Length: 300
Image (cartoon, rainbow, N blue to C red; front, side, top):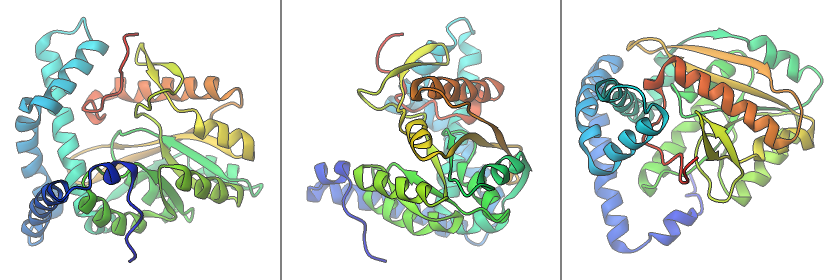
């Protein structure tokens, strides 16, 4: 497979020392995958997740982001309760990383219980496209697999991994869950627009901070939130649907839910509703969200 163009991040971090550091990290990650090969997938994931639960909250960068974000959103909860959420979130983050490194086995062995697929069928009945929006919650690849198994191939636009070798390897596997796979940026947005205009389905993760994006409420605070997904749906006549795949247990079972279409309004109003729905998922099970993200920059 031809290597994709360098992302802006990789282009800015392209010294030989950057590439060497990426290679060492990539080799270590792949060695974990090779070591797991002879063992049952879910059991191996849980062994490593147990380590992640203890290690990640104690790392200077991720651990501080976990602590700061939880203190921002849950200032009235006891410190012990916030630490428990941080440990759950760290274990979940570890599970997801290992699932991505073993995405071929994951795609073969994951089990999904699906609610609301009729909403996708109804939205596509008129030949219009569908923009599914989700968050770094549960495992969104289980969502795409559920759509694929139901006969609705779902593409994805994603942010490249910081490690160029992990990114290239993962890109070769993400296609197992549905195509096209598009990289965030002007080129990817053009591809996404064309795909939706032709009646396609694509998934967009909308819970990462983008500097300069409108400030919209999220978990009780103002957060920079891109409105591109809503604007694209309005412009193309596509349906905007919130959807998520919540992890049900440690044996590879996920509950996939496609929710009611987001009512058409201004892009800001539509994304405010999306943020509200994502916030409800997180309140339901805070340990399944990526608290390690730098979701908030400004006080709010």
